[in-house]
Image 1: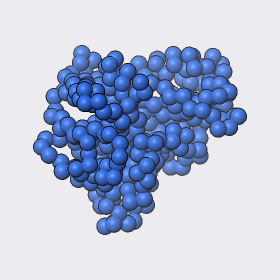
Image 2: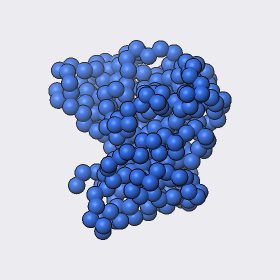
Image 3: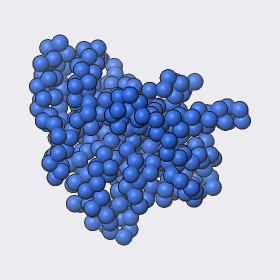
Length: 318
């Protein structure tokens, strides 16, 4: 049985998450379950086939790291949803999780990636963050909002009907997470919400990588040669073991053989299961992006450089 895609929609308080979901799901013909991480009703459109409202009930594991808070309530609800559809004879197509405005997504990711049953039935497809065009720059003063943006694959700028000039906001968003795709919500194609094109997630020759927030740093690495996947896994595991509390995000497309690229995606200590992507060209370079907080990313470059012979690669920064 194919795994069920889970999309996470986050954003700071009042950024338009629920409005975005209401519009997105209004005309959907798929069986989509929606988990809303709020207290009380949210008024989503009647076409949503199932909504479960999850209260905060976090179980802290022994590691003590914020990314290792396991959401037992979320795990139980996902299993409940699966069972509900199974007993009713219906097929669950997709799941959407809407977080609170102050939530970080690490506990959600850890819950899905650390539970064997959930791993066998669900996969995290993409993270979307809504940013208010009116107050977005002000919200970037909050650590929670920065974390949401850094961990996102798509950034949707909302309320552009009220404030249309978003150049300064887009510049700052790119400096925090240049590999995320930025859209005006009104121009976003709803069909792309679940149909993710992984090859669009990384771009070449980025400009103005580093944020005005001096603590947030980004490095992009272009890698030539076919990567030894086993050796890379050992290197990345060792790197995140040592610096996982400071490396906020790692993303990449790796050239490992003649047919496939591997999509690498991680948040702090957590690494998503790799996704194999069919090549469209005979030769494609690998690309890795690291986003850190209070860490000199030259250490990442030097570390990978020291492994380059074992990995059978040549590295350069963008």
